[in-house]
Each structure stands twice: as C-alpha cells, then as structure tokens.
Amino acid sequence: MGRAAGGERGVDVSRRPASSLFFAAFCVVAAGCDAPAATRRVDAAAYPGIVASAARERSALAAEWRAARGPADEAKILDRASAALVRIVSERILPAWDGTPWSLGGTASAPGRRPIACGYLVSTALEHAGLRVERARLAQQAAEHIVTTLVPSDRIARFRRASLGQFLASVIEAGDGVYLVGLDYHVGFLVVRGRQAFFHHASRNAGAVVREPAILSGALARSNYRVVGKLFDRGLARAWLTDSSLPTRVN
Image (cartoon, rainbow, N blue to C red; front, side, top):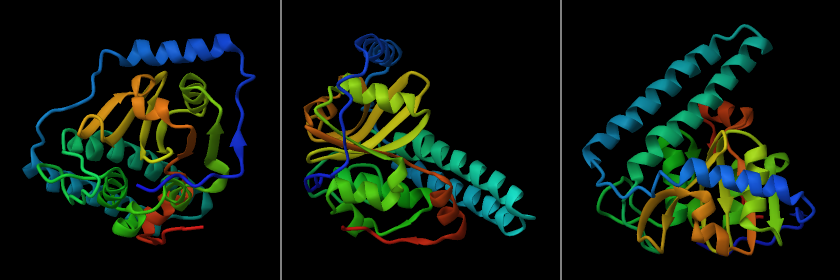
C-alpha cells in the first residue's frame, strides 16, 4: 500500500469540546471491547455461496430499478440498494475474510490460507459485493486514490493533528454505515453502528485480517494523516444496480 497522498483539505478538530470527545471515545470502548479481533478459521468452501447470494440480491434490485416508475420509485430503490450494500459488505463479505493471512504482496482472491494485502482486501471485498472495480489497479494505489475512486468529494474528510478519539468522534457523528479509511501506509474499512466503531483490515501487526474495536487499533492511532469517506451513496448504489464500471482515480 502506497502512502496516502496529502490532500489539501485538512480538518482541524482540535477545538471540539473535550467532554464530547471523551464521551464518544468511551462509548466506542464500552460497546466494543468485549468483541475481540476475529481470528477464526475461515470456511473457504462457504464463500462462493456468500458471493452468489450478493449477486442474487443485486439482480433482484436491478430488476426493480429497471421497472421503476419515475424518480420517486428510483430514489426508494437506490436507498434500498445502499442499505443492501452496507449489509452485504459488513455482515457477509468482511466477516468471511477474518483470519486470512496478511502479507505485503498478498493477492488472494478468496479467504483462506493464501495471504492478502490491505489494498487487495478492500478492492476484492467490493468486487465480490458486486461493484465493477479494477481489482488489481485499485488495490495498488495510494490510500488517498482508493478513497477518491469510490467516494464523492463531499463525503470525504481529511484529518491532520487529530487524536484517534477526535477522529472517531467525528466519524461516529456522521452516522451508521461503512467507511473507507486511508492512512499513511494503510487502508481498511471502518464499520459504525450506533456508538460502536470497528476497524476491519488486513493487519501487518496481527498477520491476518482482523476486526477490532477502532479505539484500540494501533494502525489507526499511529497514522499522522487520515482520509475517510462514507461508502454506498446513491451514486455508488446506482453503479451497482446498473453494473457500471468504476475506473480507478489516480489524481
């Protein structure tokens, strides 16, 4: 994973009230510390069924999209598609990868014994959810470019000089969902539900794909720069339903 390119729109949240930051960080820890990073053995034989199930769900919603009667119907279907993508990625695809070995050059195309790198986990998970990403090219980009490929600029925030607690408080305030997080030399998914936030990534320190409470993540804490974007807006949902290509952005 290349270094995250330094964006020009840094967010300085140093003036946020300390009490609200403490409360948010406390809630993340209290809700998440009883859920340790996953290291279970992956049942690789079950994974094709997970991917096939995602494809069936996309196909059914795509048929509804084609039969939509006007903008109001289309908007409702897009919102359902967005919710479906959140569910597919956070509850089906990513958990199946837990425990898969990490390596810097890992390019595994399915969970199991072959290793995977952080960028390839991101691009592969999204491809298996049904998005037409350039799996290899996207995986090899700097984290900044991975985020900007998949998230529109108005849904992206960049953080410098922010503590981990400040960063997580800001993301949690943005609401439930799946976020893509780029760090100095790393990339992964941040899954937020209520006051819980988990970082799901191919971890060099753990030597495997893990899901860990975000407030306890060394990778998140060590990075000097964080770029984060909320995935699965209506634009990405439309690309999913229409099977549209998502070219990798490199500038």
